Amino acid sequence: MRVLPYGDQALLVELDPELDPLGLLAAVRAAALPGVGELVPAARTLLIRFDPGEVTAAGLRAAVAELIPQAAEGATAPPVVLPVVYDGADLDAVGERTGLTVAEVVARHCAATYTVAFCGFAPGFAYLRGLDPVLQLPRLESPRTSVPAGSVAIAAEYTAVYPRASPGGWLLLGRTDARLWDLDRTPPARLTPGTPVRFRPA
Image (cartoon, rainbow, N blue to C red; front, top):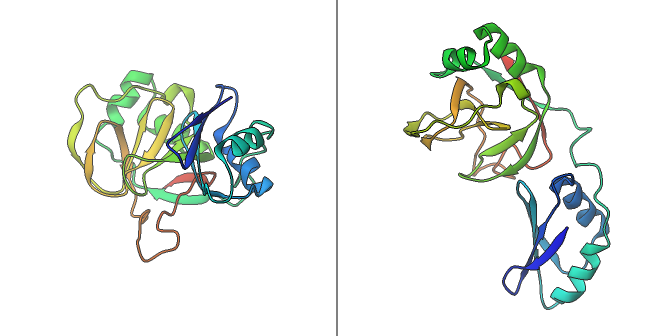
């Protein structure tokens, strides 16, 4: 992995494809390194914010380079189960492109236990990895101008739920009434990195 400066109060760790950013996140937390603040995982990176009054960038870089990624946090926790009405606008098209019946698409989507790899795009939008390889299809060539809140969708290697109405180019399988972003909740996001997730037909 490479540890790079990211301004004067953060480091960006770029990981090799075989390494899990969530595993490094767990290792950083377990090490309780002085001065470390917010940790932000992404698909292949981990952003580490730090207090330069407590630790130097060089010191933190050296400490992080010595860490061994651990098992991803949340792997043994009970999954968050999200009920889904499978009536999405792209459900039939996904079946046609994969050679599956609609029932088989639903069954494959529900069969996996997913893990929140990282969050982004919009508040509460969690990228869930663990999608069946047969369902790994590219985004729409022309994104929709508005995707309804609660839409359950797939794109590439991920599945996700749109926490609020927004533009989007993912393939829509269905919808859930689960509230994934709530400012009156701590934390506001129901799905945070490392959280296991299951879908079930409503």
